[in-house]
Length: 127
Image 1 (tube, one colour):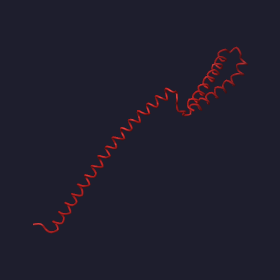
Image 2 (cartoon, rainbow, N blue to C red):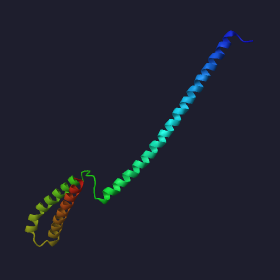
Image 3 (cartoon, rainbow, N blue to C red):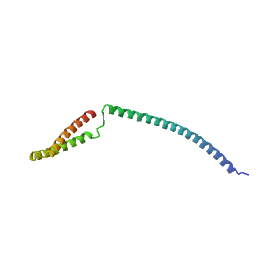
Image 4 (cartoon, rainbow, N blue to C red):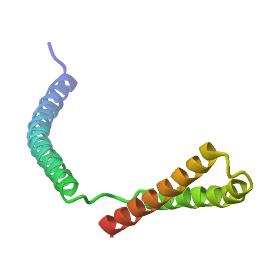
């Protein structure tokens, strides 16, 4: 034997179950659309990765690079090398027989000139 209160609770439970089933259907539809969007985004990411790789290969072929401060660092090295050569010149004049030292200073001077030329080329390619 059921009481009247039990009958009302059955109706509320059925109503609640139907609301929850409806909500589950809506959530499944949202989940499907999210999965589709996620798949589309993954495909787009793969396309962009391929595009980036193609651009990098093209930049390498055309000798285009990012600066990343390389030019400034090279100029700083050149300035330091020139400073060392300036300091070494009086020593070469004072000790002309020291061929090893004079050769080393001459080579440092040549390398400084080469690095300066490379620095100019890098700046031209970047700009």
